[in-house]
Length: 531
View 1 (cartoon, one colour):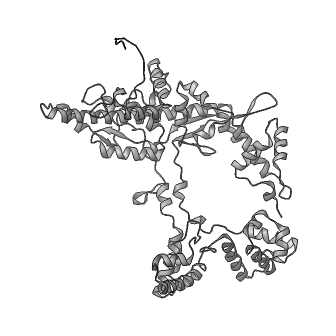
View 2 (cartoon, helix red, strand yellow; view 1 turned 90 degrees about the vertical axis):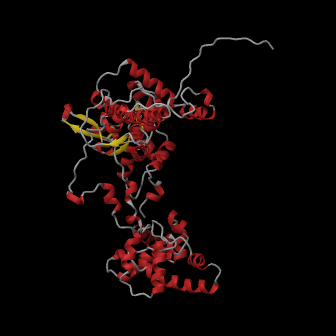
View 3 (cartoon, helix red, strand yellow; view 1 turned 60 degrees about the vertical axis):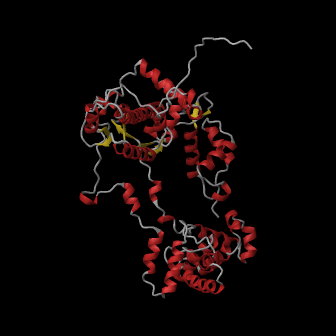
């Protein structure tokens, strides 16, 4: 084999720590970003929060409407083209450090301009993010998350009622144990025997005693409010509510004792018969007429299948919008102002005292390595602030483009939504398509019609008779509108909805209608029919 030397020129993309961090921060949700900022504040001594007013960087939000220069476009194109392959490239950099241009023996390099002095970008970022006031004042101020956290839980509600019961120490302890064993819906999923065995082990005598106390406690638990709590299954939950109605003995026909009795017999049958509204099989099993079974099913439909629903922690349902859209003007002069939510923008700056101290320190010998390490942390803090700002700038640019494209939605609602794909926004802003995908994931926009994820404004198009396209979101809205206006006695089938859409000039097959209907959580026509 002959050996020789050759010269070859090639190009490859090196994912620097700054580039990786920028891509990672872009795809984080508001909650994840908050955790990331807290972690960085704990790890980097040069980074701090600040409430002081400070000068903005030249490429900040104030420059949003200015044209993007060619160098910035090239940087964004390079950055977001790499985003699609970041996972594979990062793995390669970790497994094969010789192939990485940035991974050295001393860890990632955050070198910037080589300076350790205070720079314009060391000032506070997010100075425009002043906290908005609310209707509370003084020490009582709290945000929506704190209000949700203070909501009474199901267990607390039941424990408070249990205080009014005169029980022995054993029965009181058993009742507390059962209350804490309930799930979020108010059901007791574990059998009493399993609960007793879990506490007593293999002691048969102690298991029997515990089982007695649990049986007594279960009766007490099921007598508490909300009615139906402590049930072991759906049938028992419905029966508890019907028995409570029986005790009321109201004179109106809706709670007629005979009707409640039929409903109780229905709840003693397999629940799949009730779910299918199988009246033919329920009539002989319940020894009731067709009209009585239909009326009883209607009564059961008014009951609460999840007694603990209203006590569920609402904090997990709170969505803090990243972007706020406000309507200005009226008529043909209507416009929509798009701005970032100041509540979610972290206000960070480089600690000027530490940065100045590092600037004035000239270590030599053994201290040179320590000084170099501190300089790396200072540059890391600066890059983190820049990447945070770049993240919000990109979110605002994408949101502004979405509002401009979907202006009809903000004027008329979801029926006016137009088809929109990621590529359109990517081409308009000069960004990579994967960037738009990252920006629109887990980011929310508050609009006059509610709060929506940015991905909500994107949707495929369905063909129309005029040769144009109708947004799938608008089609879903039409289906919802058709179902809301249908007759309860004769609900619309998927075929009928498909024909109605064709009358509107929208080509939508029956299977597509069924898919959209299921996505809207609308039951089939057979289950929507009023008995």
